[in-house]
Length: 158
Image 1 (cartoon, rainbow, N blue to C red):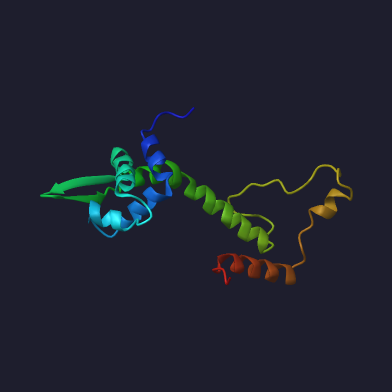
Image 2 (image 1 turned 120 degrees about the horizontal axis):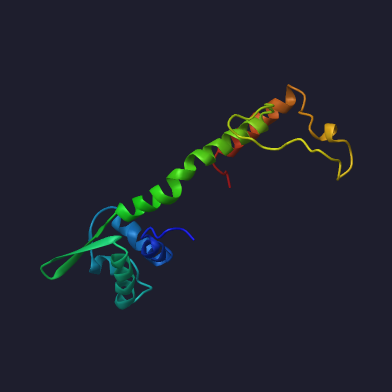
């Protein structure tokens, strides 16, 4: 079990698509509770306020009363804590894996920074292990790899 990092309420709050939409609505700046309720015509005022209470308990929003109005502000600190705890430390790993994929797709014999077992020691599936570990001949295989990697980086046309 991992040590308690105090982010459980944040994860619970972010689990709801309605609460994530409330946070999206607050990204551009503070909004009154009434303005937020208007963003969700499919929900009652009571339901929206319950979602806002969960967000406030997780410290994702800060409510500031001003006269008869209540202004709600996005607090990005817990989201930054989630990023630093769960995303930042894996960025290097993913970058290394993508670089290795690029190198393998382009036909390079040695991926940089990635150690993968590519040579089989036995012939369990038939055929010799030396046939399975041969790299494609230079030329068309390398060009195909580059096209494949460039296609991965292009946005979907669909």
